[in-house]
Length: 273
Length: 283
Image (cartoon, rainbow over all chains, first blue to last red; front, side, top):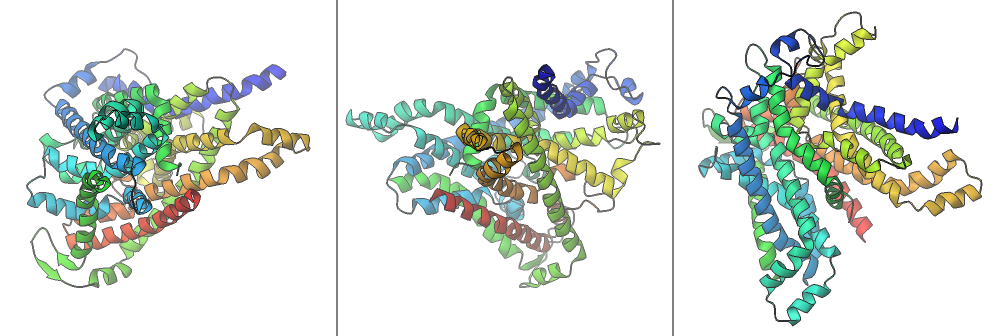
């Protein structure tokens, strides 16, 4: 009796976990079935059918291109947001600043601005600048939309670091940029890295701006590419979920490995004041 | 010096957020078709049209309904998950990692997986329900408004409840165990401990998570756009979808911008509440 009392929560936990993971598992299973198997209504592949993956990367679909686009756009945005964000976060965390609370409140409010409220003007402005269907046409808006979160998280990380090291560096005659580069950044590296990963994930998963600003086929990102995947006639479910698995798996691995850091980073943005 | 460091961030944020917001309001004062390029100043008449627009009113109603239903479920499910995870002695770390999977899956892909699971001919849901003898014939889920909403809500809760659980779990872990021990000494039962210790101490965490998620849920777009495109027969058209279609299908940038401002005001009213709560906690 006592034993079941101890085991029950674990059995329950395993059941719940499977339920949470089920959609993702079924996605992977579908990606490994041949079109015939899928049409026959099987739930799991009898033989592993790898052709879906080959098809996704062959000439018929330009999935490699979408992945490259997403990678360039998300990577550049992450680097830019962190570089710009570090400067602002440092000023907020370490320097004497009048109206600091007003800046913080402004950044918080900016994080809540719905993208769609900026989309008609952004479309017109970027069109005039000739930046529609370019990498910069997405990188600039993405940086703007991710900066509030980046600054907020970095501000929280910097504040938690002891200021003594920087003071010592200043006494030794280190300049301002040197102090940031050689003292603060190495100390804050885990936090900075987490913030960069989060910005990267948000850009990788973004849909609305990518859908409206980069409409040309060759400039699509992964999310738009996959949403446009279903053809007019037969839906290639196997190929769709092969592509979905390829673009989701790196994120899932990142999250499994960095889970603790990601959660605490996100919570610094959501909860901590 | 500090202003110099803040300048790049403020400049980019103004360029991408503030300027477009002002420009959006300006655009909303025009009748402006991107198709014909005709542009007439009409003052506030777009906003007056909004009030008499049945489609707008229905989309706002759907948005608010979606937010209240998904958030209620999300907090309930999240709370259950958190309490369960909290009660486990071992394996909590692994559990936390698995729970993060739905969060990491792009919403677009979540929409496709759930659409596929509820596919009428080949989906897993009809097969399982049929095997259990719960439905006599396969349901055509995405052709019926009520069933479609059920699938949308399930997908949203699947995607967001696990993260809510992690936030609540963090809150649970901050409650000192001594409080429970003291309560036990005083003869409190499980329900009393929950009502008098857990709930009051957890309430601020839940409230903030709730408001934060409200703001997110009001902007719902990816999930519904990819799964149904607003169908069947417009029954899942939320405000952001109506807004998107007005802008990029009808190319009506005047009225579309007025719709954007309406969504902005809706989100901002909730945000103000959030910021005020944050400020009160910070003091």
